[in-house]
Amino acid sequence: MEKLFNELGLEQNLIEGLIKQGIESPTEIQVKAIPMGLDGADIIGESETGTGKTLAYLLPIFQKIDVTSKDIQAIILAPTHELAMQIYKQVELLSVNSRSEVRSTSIIGNVNIKRQLESLKQKPHILVGSAGRILELITMKKLKSHFVKTIVIDEGDRMIDEDNIDGVKAIIKTTLRDRQIMLFSATISLKVVEIAKTLMKEPKVIKVGDKSVVNPNIEHIYFVVERRDKIELLRKLISATKPSKAIIFINKSDEVEITTSKLRYHNLKVEGIHGSSEKENRKKALEDFNEGKIQLLVASDLAARGLDIVGVSHIFNLDIPENSKDYLHRVGRTGRMGEHGLALSIAVERELDLIKNYERDFNIEITQKEIHRGEITEPQIITKDRNAGHNTRTDNK
Image 1 (cartoon, rainbow, N blue to C red):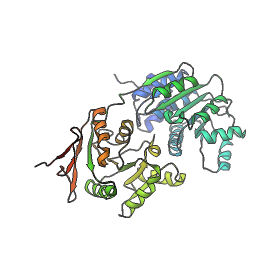
Image 2 (image 1 turned 60 degrees about the vertical axis):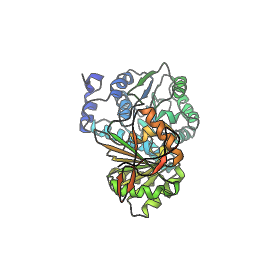
Image 3 (image 1 turned 180 degrees about the vertical axis):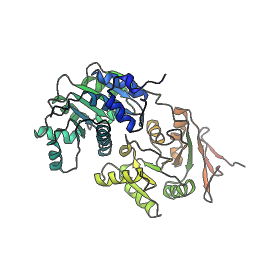
Image 4 (image 1 turned 180 degrees about the horizontal axis):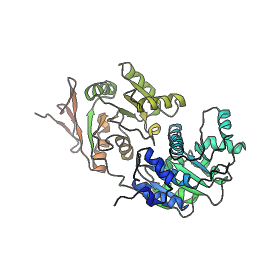
């Protein structure tokens, strides 16, 4: 029988706030994590993007905040500016909808530090942001963290990698000894679990869903082309499929702008996001994409991690991802809420073995197609037989 929010121990004002967002029943990760969070347990939670992980940790935090205090009581750490702002907006929305007096602010890098210092004068209860900037303000003694009783590490597999772990550890050391730490991510390796356990006290490990299962609503097809012809084929596929909202994935962040420019040349409504682009530009691109002002978003895996974008009809792999986990993350952004999704991969000959790996790992069929006179058709070209290792003709009459 489906659980209800009031069975999880949540206060009525929070439940009413969720109803205003159109959320009436909890997801599986919320059912498992919320009671543990309310009990103060340390948590390692794994669940796919779009399954409600943010509310799984926010709701217990909100319920335990002492709104009469002027101290920071919770810090939420995120690996990218976009994800931090996405979480911050959810905090603000929940506060308004639940008529709560919980105050919050965002603290991220590459933003005017004076404005952030001003926002701290409003005495926020919750900080959302990047480990680097938050640690910088703590070190400058501009931010007092010794009353923080909850730390959330979102996209934990990235937040405790070698680039971020030192900053995360340093922030944790400045907080209460009897703090609660919750780590959430779409995928968590055994290595991440082991590192996380060194930061926590007897954490509860929650794993929701089978990470090796691809949404059955997604159709998978691929095309074989010379590398120099990839952009031209992509343009033709966009014209043939007429996606309402599509994400184009590439492997290298530094090629996002080049790809975006080439598509703009053909008068396509497209923007790109990558790690080094200006924060305001990335924010604007995501807003325009979500609102339907642009049709296409070019992104690297890194820039797209954790972003919950709804209504994506097509995924284009301009570059084939190098591992199965990234393929799963990419295609999982379409075919949601029972809708049909289409994942199109544009491969060169040497990438065909990767496609074969995805078929084996996820027990799916990725069908070869070609485009002829503006329509996607069965292949009538000579390609490499991935199973037999020799050339074969694949005419379909």
